[in-house]
Image (cartoon, rainbow, N blue to C red; front, side, top):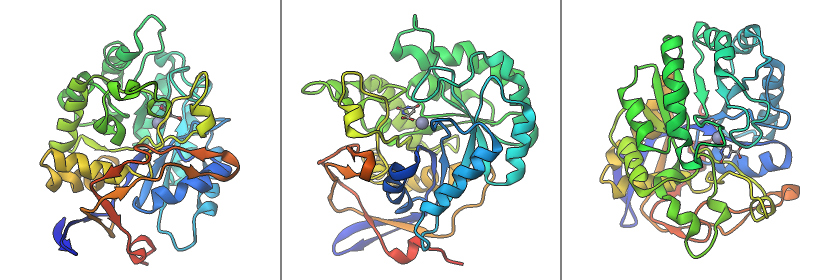
Length: 362
Ligand code: DOR
Ligand code: ZN
């Protein structure tokens, strides 16, 4: 990491970061959102909750090809694919996926927990052969850690998942690498900090930036509704402490999850925050406010590759302390308009975008 100044503004140059949790969708929507990720991230772990979900090695291969086809030929970006676990999946599917080389993990959605999770796992105990296959292949299990029990308050679902399921899972399959995705509570932070070295967590930009009050400020803000839902301020502070504290167990995962504006601004708006257009700028602002800019590079570009056993990126990315005006709307062709996180507001850090850094170096 190097600091400097340009035109009197502070600059920060870090190893080009990765996004360890991203929803790219498909078709026109994918084409519209992909450049917002590739403008700064070198790799991203691509979530498999399409319709239908990516439940086979062949489907992961086809999706991988569609992403590569949607990339501008000069852009240096590697999609890291995932498999969507189901009750019906056989361990051999995991071995087939691993053998392809570009599948890096499998995603556990408790059935009904979130967007397009209906085909997810209904009983974690029955999925144990899949977890063992993952451990044997050295592939991490990425967990949407919320219970679906309707009797559990929506704000408690992550903390209850940890106590009811995650503890047992880690004990049952101790060799399995597990990423507790998009952690939102102080309980999750403490659990990860105290857990074995095989356990890590991603943290989103929006959960670092906002508490649950933001959803209701001046009225109901559907564009701030996501799952796990935003939590109280004490939890946000625990996330900031975890992200900025330097522990390699925590790394960047935006969970950028685009939905058309009409689907968000509806009688029953769907969950997901489209953060790709502002994510790196938000992370930089949060780290600066915590007095931890020197730890931004670890969180964005080092801890994830260390956990996944992948090399660090070779390129760099430069941020400048100059106001960044966030677009109010991002058009997405036939998929409609998207409203990004922090739409219309101004952030403290901007991306300096020398095209040469974002294209292939070899
Ligand atoms: O808010 C969310 N949106 N949380 C998820 O887990 C899924 C995601 C989506 O796919 O829209
Ligand atoms: Zn997600």
